[in-house]
Structure formats: structure tokens, C-alpha cells
Length: 112
Length: 113
Image 1 (cartoon, each protein chain N blue to C red):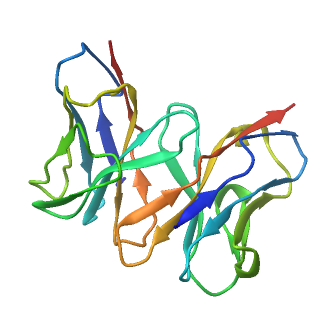
Image 2 (cartoon, rainbow over the protein chains, first blue to last red; image 1 turned 180 degrees about the horizontal axis):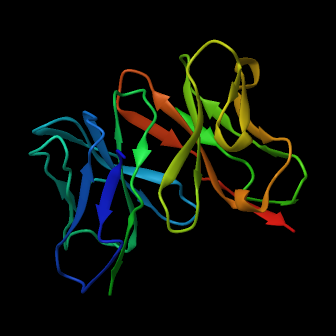
């Protein structure tokens, strides 16, 4: 079955360390997204990519970086510059800009 | 500015009762609207979508939603709730011509046995 795989499900890091979250899709979707979810705040867009080797900042890109070297993969790096990195991170993909989003099961990052 | 408002943070219903979750949007053009459901610690699953045409749309798990342009609303309904429907529900609008989606802050549904 096609879908989006995020790994790991839980991630623990010390403050000051960079950490990379994995996202892989086999839906053959062109667009991929990273959202951050905090209680009571809905989903906030970090970065998105419409096509390989291209990506754009979302609403809260500071302290994050991404790459899109392959259509299937869109890893997110949470850098030490991100002031409050502890959150639930969701990766998604879509066929086009107005299509429904397909989500992975998320990675919960805890930084202490 | 574009926005999505879900006025109810929490809703509690008894199993077998009907359900309506409210969603209001602010968007100038014809909206592409979605409802998603999220179980704890999981990703979001699409329940239904509205793009155009019939204003009453059917989704999975027995859910439906009605688009009312005059009220800028897209409320989600289910005639008889099951205990397994307990989850968080998100309404979203896609910004046409972009790859951006605006999500509401969610409504957490609790189902009493």
C-alpha cells in the first residue's frame, strides 16, 4: 500500500544538537510538506517542496532546514537555532497544490 | 486574511447521539475545504473534501459535511456517533494557486458510553 513513512516515532536529543527527521513517500506525489503541531495550535507549516531540488519556507521556518534530492524523500533537520524544538512533527504529501494532504504518523521530538 | 475557525475546543456526546462540529472559514475565492481526523499520537486522516458542485459531501466512516457559502461554513456531521469516533477533528482550507493549507485549531471529541 502507498503511504508516507516517518521515522523514528520518538526522538530524544540534548539541547544544542541538530537532529534529522526522516520522511519517505511512495505515493508518487510531487509536493511534500513539514508541519509542526503543538497542543491547541493546530498545524503550522515549516517548509514545503513542490518539486525535486526546490523548496520554500513556510510560516515557521526559522531554526529548520530541509532538502529534496529525491521525489520520495523530504528530510527535516531541526537545528540548535530552533528555540523551542520539542513538538510533534508531521510530514505530508499531495498530488497538487489543492489536493488532499496525505500524512505520515508523525515524529515526537523531545529536546532537553 | 485567510483563516479557519473551529469554535469548539472540546465536545462531548453520548454514543449513538448525533454530532455536528463547526467550521468557519475566511477566504475570498471559492474554497477547497477538508475535514481530517487525528487519533492520539497519529497522523491526520482525510474524512472528506469539498471542491465544487453538490454542497453536501459524503465521507468515510459515515461522516458528511455541508458547505454553506452564505455562512462561510463547512460543518461536519454524523447521525450516530460510535465510541471509536473519539479523536481530534481538523477543518482546513487550501489556498488556491499555492501549496498552502490553513488548518483550524481542532475540536477534540469525547464519546460517552
